[in-house]
Length: 427
Image (cartoon, rainbow, N blue to C red):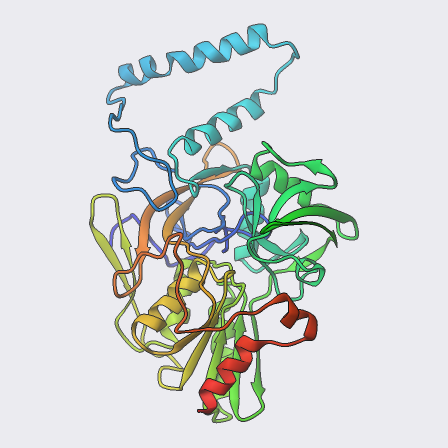
């Protein structure tokens, strides 16, 4: 494997679908490269991401690529190409009604516009605050907000998944909710990253989100708290079945999953339920490591680049749970890194997927800090494929056994998906 993707030392959802990133943007999926500080991310998070040379085939849902591609090959051509930009810069400063202009904001807006012009919703600019927040999430650090992974790259902020036991979850926020107003202010036309800043805020203060959920519109008031990004919860269920819920693929996840497996397997369970519901993603290296706990050998995923070449990521030896009967729970909030793990388990027939169709995040991003400031860019560098070569972007994984989970179930305190998994393992 070459410099396209290194994944040894971590820095980085959904993780950020943008990901990338606890109510920052959605799914992040990445690894920090020590030499050039490039982080690889499978972002649903879709907080932002882009590419100078477009991939020859669009990802589903992305804009078409122009048939004529103009590229500056020499410094002279680059100077000529940018003459309209600098002319516009000068005209703006000479003629705009409200002076003085904020040149820093104009520069950042220009970068964001350039990346957005690729037509790839996962390619984007992160200002210093967004970049720091996204990395805090993947490091398992604490931040202040409502506790949800979101996608900021569409017309409105979209909830990828609320975090377990977070203010967002307790208030009733759900995957696929669209934030159309914040504290009564219409968010139409407001860039997702700016809208996100209105959602974040000091602990103890409330924010009211106007949500569009299908055909329904409702107001949800959430009191912000200090959020420690959760990783793992585990326990033995009645009947000798082990249960592990993984909420994010951050830097702490692999170790915590292994510790949970050691404790649970020592009790000789007859089966294991691995709950990836509302897991918005995270680090690529963590996805491979966690998948390897359940899959003894073989390719976990492929990365396919714009020139058609592929790199493969194989299972690492020493997995603790490669033979125990296994059920994986997925839902519409299962995204990015979660889909890599669930997709590999499904392709190998290693376990049974129960729940509803997952989010559908099938591209890979590098997170690259800018040398000249504390912000960074996300750039889509590849698509990822399951071991059988399936591309799940905007499609998601279809469960082997479909079990819905309705609002009526929530209100009644039922979990039919977990019940179905228990029943399946008991059989």
